[in-house]
Amino acid sequence: MTNYELMLALAQEQTEESQKKLIKEVEGTIEKAKGNAEKSEALGKKTLAYPIEGSKEGFYWLVNFEAGAETPKKLNDQLRIEDSVLRYLISKKDEIKKPSKKKVKVERKKSVPTFIR
Image 1 (cartoon, helix red, strand yellow):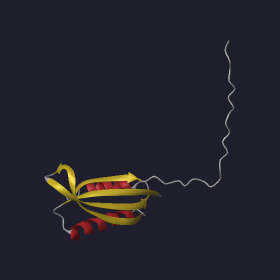
Image 2 (cartoon, rainbow, N blue to C red):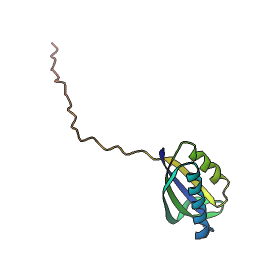
Image 3 (cartoon, rainbow, N blue to C red):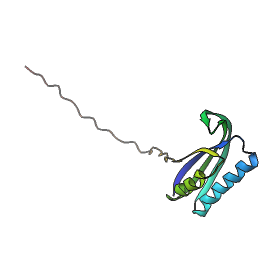
Image 4 (cartoon, rainbow, N blue to C red):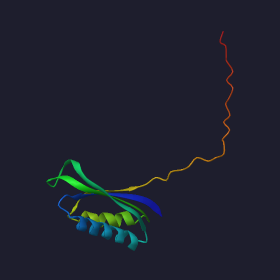
């Protein structure tokens, strides 16, 4: 299983109930694919960098989930045909590796000065 992040920009005309309904559908798609929707967070209404379909503002949502490799394609197919979605991005989250507690001994080569005559 891989950790993913889905960022959604929804049309400003959407009501809060319709936004939550769409997020529940997305979470349902993830769970049908034997994934786990860890966290869904509303980021609020923000101004878009440029107008999309006449909208200057949009509601942003962030969904963190864990799923197999085929799940992003299923979400892509679902979100592409949804009229209320202005833009979306599914990205793979990098795992943060913690440094080991063992100290690594670094050997330095002693450089011997060479003299040219």
